[in-house]
Image (cartoon, rainbow, N blue to C red; front, side, top):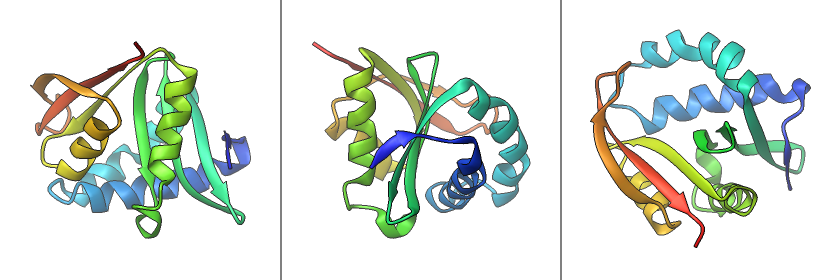
Amino acid sequence: MIKQMGCFEVEEVMTIWLKTNIIAHNFIEKDYWIKNYKIVKEEYLQISETFIYKEDGIIKGFISVIDNLFIGALFVLNEYHRKGVGRKLLKYCQDLYYNLELTVYLKNTSSVNFYKHCGFIVEEEKENEDSGFMEYVMRYRKF
């Protein structure tokens, strides 16, 4: 079931954020994610609409949208990859919002391909100011 994240679910969501970032972005030092944990929790999560996919009492993934446009996070626990969780979360937001955009690291090819398959197109390639790694800016528009 997809629902808006409750205040009591922040810790579980942040655990997913940290675990999944370390695995999905293994080309970036683990300390980078640990260093950014507090900022994401106290700043970004607070200004986002965050939706969780919860089943059998377990949050299996989440998506956060900032300013009704920017997907700042879409993370699914590793054991639930390729089970439709990410696709359902993304579709939920595609139904809610007319336009969506996101950034994704070029080296994260499985996510790049996932977003392309879900209707996103690459609009730009740029260096991430914080990490220094190259990323795509991808956009989705309802037609």
